[in-house]
Length: 267
Image 1: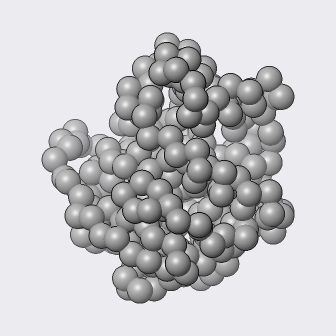
Image 2: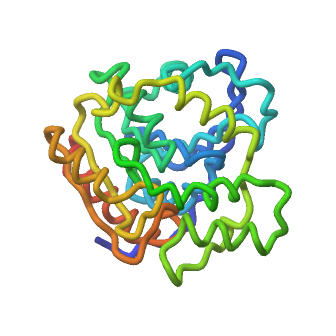
């Protein structure tokens, strides 16, 4: 794969669907790739991956949920199916189908629900930090919840993010910021109201899991289980990489995703 120079900046667009206001970050032109971020996190987490996709001939659209560039309001989500319905309204309104769906962490659940709802309209499915089947140990949760605790001092918050989202020795960089506790609460409520088994297979499109091998929140066994159960699914395991994955191994993530899409999508 050629050396990638990151030069592409996004075009922003605000859209409202079902009373929920999102910001879309558009990069490049070509086959559409929709990217949904982690729990309580913005679409800007995908900035480097979207730049690389754009430079390789894709139209990357990173979705920022309500509460970042747009008001959070009261998101109208009774379950993950409602978030999936929002995404399909965006995709249809912008004429972006058939699409590649990419989800990171919580976003992996969202894009699986989205793909399951309309499998024939999904060209490929990419899961970054694939969870939902095998849960982390109970010792992980107090530190995980600290990441959304707005009352913590900066040093304690940063250490919590580092301990639970990153592999040992990795720098959290900009991930010390960008945590929306109110959004995360709405998203966790949607998870609790959804039967994972109803969408866990993520439809039928060709699939890729990019999995950090030091992921404390989504243990790697999640990836192995899904690949064993689902046809046309592959996994790329990344050493020295935790749940954050995007800031930890950006080049490896881009190479895995772009190589997969070039293999699976028509020229």
